[in-house]
Length: 161
Ligand SMILES: Cc1cc2nc3c(=O)[nH]c(=O)nc-3n(C[C@H](O)[C@H](O)[C@H](O)COP(=O)(O)O)c2cc1C
Image 1: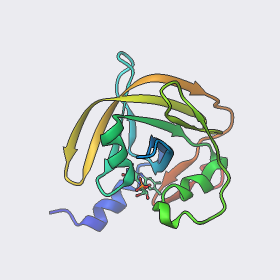
Image 2 (image 1 turned 45 degrees about the vertical axis):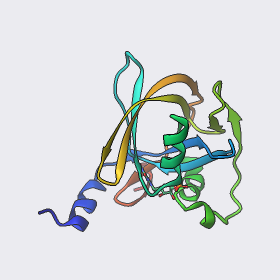
Image 3 (image 1 turned 180 degrees about the vertical axis):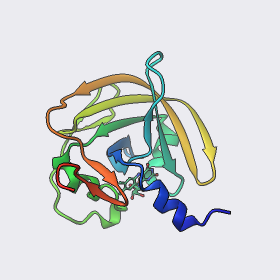
């Protein structure tokens, strides 16, 4: 058996970008959570995947609405990445952000590098996570600047480290 903390540490050596997954809550209001378990799948059909823990609010909202947005963060949005990694009741810091509406009402986190608006095509439950395959129905790009990155359990800027 693998030692869990060693496994976690080894996985942390895979440097990733950082996204915020946007959904609609039970009142139709925007909800956001930070996620780095994101990957492209195919160009045709245009598909991506995210891996969402069952303990999150986001999981419940995705199960109900069958759609989600992926917002790729830029370096200047590190504070937002940290903010949306907290449980909503702990999001007490005064962090500035705002949303636009995508075609299908999904929230677009303004200032992100890229937004993908996705419809859930399929899902696979494994352990305490669900892998969602999303068909990308809308895309918005604004990619000037550098991406926010996460590596070894911390925010990472290759230009500084
Ligand atoms: C860098 C980073 C990446 C994360 N990636 C994921 C992820 O891919 N999937 C996931 O379920 N949680 C991920 N989390 C944890 C969620 O952001 C966290 O549980 C959040 O509080 C969930 O919010 P919610 O319950 O309101 O949806 C990540 C956290 C950080 C800091």
